Image 1 (cartoon, each protein chain N blue to C red):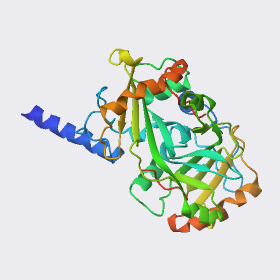
Image 2: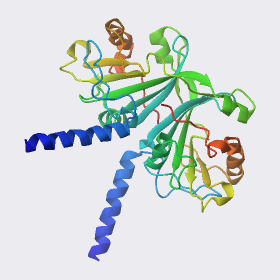
Image 3: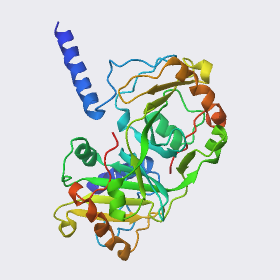
Image 4: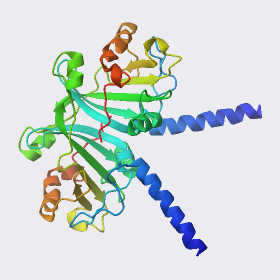
Length: 176
Length: 176
């Protein structure tokens, strides 16, 4: 009984840390994405920066690419293929002019993150055994509410990444 | 003598950690920026993400805004003014199309970080006593080699940030 009580306290303490470090989303009770069964990684918003990008066209977003410790180490040491345990997180926001910044500069100059598109959050997870059918990578996409995209969407992930095969299917380079 | 030897070992150990976590720049022997006397903060490249942006026009860059622990806490808790100890780092890269990504998508779509412009690295440091003359903020700009911009450049920092007075002179909002 004492051990169970201790466990509950420990779980509550960990949950508290997670809630603080990644306000939303990232709760352990959230739905796993189809096909690869990936859940949102708690605390991903605290991960270190790999790079930033702007996608034009249909996407029209501004994005940040973050990595867990294994990902950052692999990038900085030029390790290819990425080792098992690598997780890359991509957060996207709609691409909007900053009215307040532009007013300060008296011209249209600044573009900043706006609202969250349906493709708000993506993960690439390296596990060469579990995801052997897709070159060792699992993929997942979630909207801002933590809801995963459907199975059809997840079927497009790996084919889209195939052109980046020479860099272990990862498009993003490290921003030095 | 023993104490000195211990101190040297401790310094070497700390230097080793710094060298690993922030490959370049960020060496303790680098020059301080004029006016505010700020040096590059070791390990800033490991700080957490505040936001990303694209600046058009003369700047034409992609940028990431990172914060030390005090900055992240202040942003997440909506603390204004920012408390003493807050440091915000802004890294900028030239805004370039990604030939390899665009080839994969068969269209001009991706813009990614390119080379480092002269305004590669900037810091805003909150110290309400030390920088009382500039509303509690110290400013610094460095190029990729860690060389600070000149005094004339540093004189432009605070006036440029004055339009953001309502948000304690900080333009960047937290990207949720």
